[in-house]
Length: 485
Image (cartoon, rainbow, N blue to C red; front, top):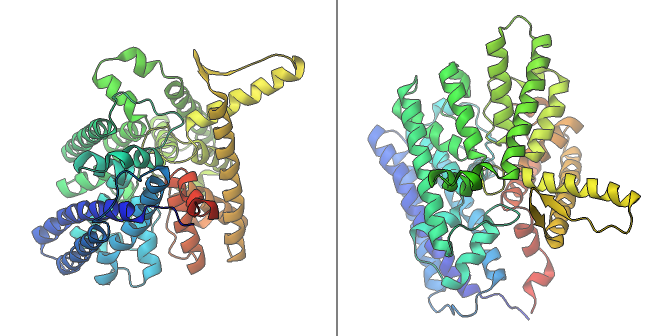
């Protein structure tokens, strides 16, 4: 028997689509300011988005708020990302900037999931409104569309926490306030504040206001879209690169810890084990990469080598995907470092994708415990992160996540291989999609997937949304048991 409360799901989707229509109006304003060819496509798309929102609300007008559970929350979250990527691609498709649905959907899904992969070969030919819309999709996707909705609009009290948990990343949610709506508002306030500060700092440097705002949107969200064909290399100044390195690391930090820092709760923030290990990994990989580059590119000065190493490492581990160097020209040794960073990535509760440092740390601790049990088989050894004991069911969940992650990598790589990609490119593209990082290996190092076959683009899109929603949310709704009583 069919058991999902579809009316409640529809009503929630209606609210989300109406809010997304309001966000698209910001792109309409930008298009009107510059008076280019994108005003009409954006207006038409905005009308379609508002119309879809109205229809969803109409279909869910008699929703029973007392019959809402985790299933409804998971389905709402998954459909939100899939449908908004469809409606969000309308300006690109209707305006003819991306002439086919496959590429337009790929580009928009890459935006909302903050992956940063692109099929565009000439970004600078796009009008300002479309460029801003691309950046805005990443900014929304960074903190989460549901978080925006919960923070800015009234929702079902029964579904709010279910959607919040289905979308936000993390092993154990360290809620610093009792109500999910208050948590979302705090997240939104911090997120908006960081974006505003970075916009001003970039504007104070070599960027104009439009470029500064766009790059702030895509840096804070760990997205990586740029308004220039050459990306950050268009400016290529130490000021911009060091500034972005700092904010990319900030974006890869658990936003709850940023709240503690703002409240001057130093012990809670700086004593976090995951955070300390994250910056330890950054420091070690930057040092190794710097030494490697010193011997590979000895003609550069020490500061340039360090800055290049720092930028590539922070961009990869934060899953932002900006580049100031071609990985393929740095050497094959760096590809191993890059692959490690692409899998581990930032902290839980941040805007970055990937497995997360916390999960990686739990896996390492559990592995070491297993070695100890080989010597002391009767010993009861718990996984600890500093003075905190990780419950057994959480350790099991992390193991399951890692297993499913690797299974998806194998399946995704196999599909890409069957579609004609080389092994390095297939494996790199799969990790890139699931970790929402954009940068890959081989000829896709630069993050441009224009030449990717059509079937592979749809698979890549599926992997992007699956990775962004922490794998379980999307895969669970594909199981037959999810839909049965």
